Image 1 (cartoon, rainbow, N blue to C red):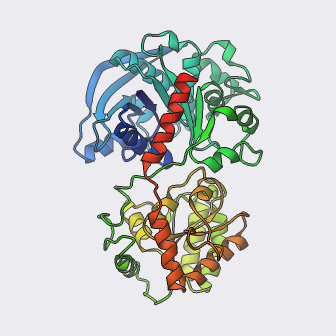
Image 2: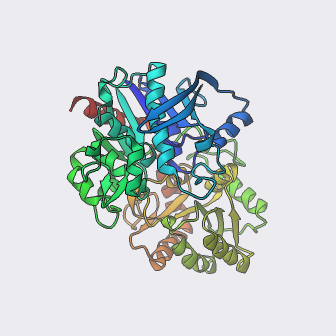
Image 3: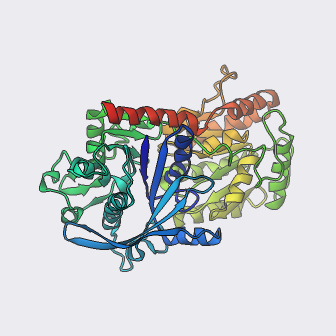
Length: 488
């Protein structure tokens, strides 16, 4: 099967979160199943810097080409390389006006948010690139709102072209809360017939909504965990699209993300102080001692170290963390927090650390090696997310024998089995349901109590480390969705 991936992010080249991780890992698993995969992504400034720092020079495969649609004509450059560590083709779409910016999703230099225009161009450039490079996909797999127009363009007549005659579309929702919404004046720039300015296409209460169009007009729709697929059909989590998702539930599938088990392997991880596996956990204890020493925290016997690695935004339950963390420290925990985001959250967490210098460290920013070190060293990982489409951090934690304490939502509910005192054979973490700090603290306090019971704690660790979070399982499920798109 020839599969075209179109995405705004690909790890490790340019990413902000789970979207990049999926689009950097799932193609590898699909290729291992025998499929031919080609990936398109924008050639951001950040991507240029990544390639330069790794002494890789993508090949310019076409002369600069004008991509035309509606009343627009925008120059595109096409460069080719491979997904790092593979032979999978990666086509980079270059245009410095749209993509050479301080951050991947930066607004225009004058502050205008031209995201819809940027990614409309990217979608049209993907189509033109396939035509010029002779890429004829069986499946176009579009990811999140940035590429939601591709299923719409396929529906609108693109299948009449030679390259896309046999193409069917699969659309993946990574986060329903970001939909590509703009005023009605943006519709003219999409290059669509007026028929698509309708409630059964991209019009939504008088606005353009790109994700809505992708959901309605794709042949199949997926999201990144089974529980999230159910949640987004409710008013609470549906972000205004729950009615549409319920009506199209026959083509909506929740497929749990995987992780790169080669990168996230405590037995071989080069970023950690001492390697270990589920049968030999002495290395984990050495990792903890080393991290505490690095952070200038005193090692204390039978004292749990709780970790938190995340963006500091409201989705991640930072309000719950700020309210509960002082109580955890007062109950005897040590804590290390790594992340960046909203200044109000950064400041609040730094103030807690300043009030508890003997037990808490807050590092603002992101450091991949330090993240690996925290997963390998912490006894517990905190994830009090308000919503979590899938979540990968809990999978990393489980793989490293770090017991997660999570709010049971989205993918967290699909991967963490809370210990209830009777299910030690299956449990691998602790959980709570209500989005309030008291329940979060109670779940963490129960974890701290069980930490002192070494036999049961080792069983929780072993259960987590034995779980299969490889991409092969997920890739086979995507393979089945591709077949549904092609033959149903």
